[in-house]
Length: 215
Length: 164
Image 1 (cartoon, helix red, strand yellow):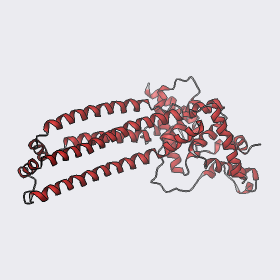
Image 2 (spheres, each protein chain N blue to C red):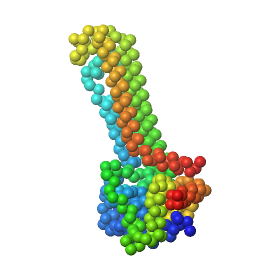
Image 3 (cartoon, chains in turn orange, cyan):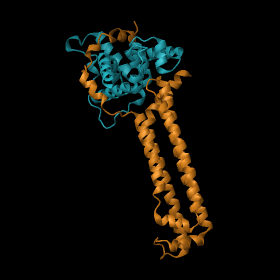
Image 4 (cartoon, rainbow over the protein chains, first blue to last red):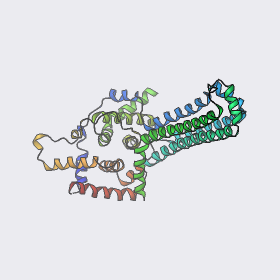
């Protein structure tokens, strides 16, 4: 007899050695909250959506008048409209994929649907990071080409750069922008690396195992 | 209506709780995690229950949801330091039959099964539960042939673990 079949022969008869939960024990469990990865992916995704949306509203007044001074408010209005349309599209897609996740599907189907939902979020992130980066680059090129206007706008705004000579100021300004940009992107990437790496590591490993069986 | 459904569900789960316990035992190593997973499975079963139409047995329907939760949805809690392993509870060796080689072999076998990866464990679990390959393949979402091949490989693997 196979070793596994030996275990199998004993498998059913030993069931009574498990703890026994009463009706009330189980009933109480229905009231508890789930902590499944699907729930966490959902919460984090909603959080991201809010984060990026609120961020767009949080542009300080001084920056707004600064942009107006530089003649860029129309450009930003258009960018915002496009941005929110794309956001809406992502929310819709995310919602549709999220709805498709069914715990009664086969193990493989369930994993595929979760990964698909996660992919929506991944593209959402890629979109956000790349827009942020290209905006940053675009704005800085614009600033660079309009150095005089920039200096004038800075002088007019409430920013405390007045004491700095214009030459040094321009250098400081661009270095500040570049460093700030790199820190922001690094922070965002680290966040996603940690959050999704942590949440999906096991799922990906198991999905790979299933895939391997079909090869 | 909701109360009625709740009552029906809890009664069914109470009757079939051993299936869930067996899965929890296979996929966790300590009592707290076992309870955690049991609870998560209960929640997932309850959520899916309104769609359960009774065209299969409740227990049959449970396998899929419970395994899906254990393999995919459950987030292993990192905050707990691994407490004492309690797998001995399921294949307990009492002092008088300690020399019993069959008992010893069972314990080794169970430990070897626990060491398999999540997917292999699911396969072995369904096999131990006397499910046929058609059911096994439908639960996992792979072809029948492939689940048979994989099962044979696992058997060889387990044999090698036990008889090095």
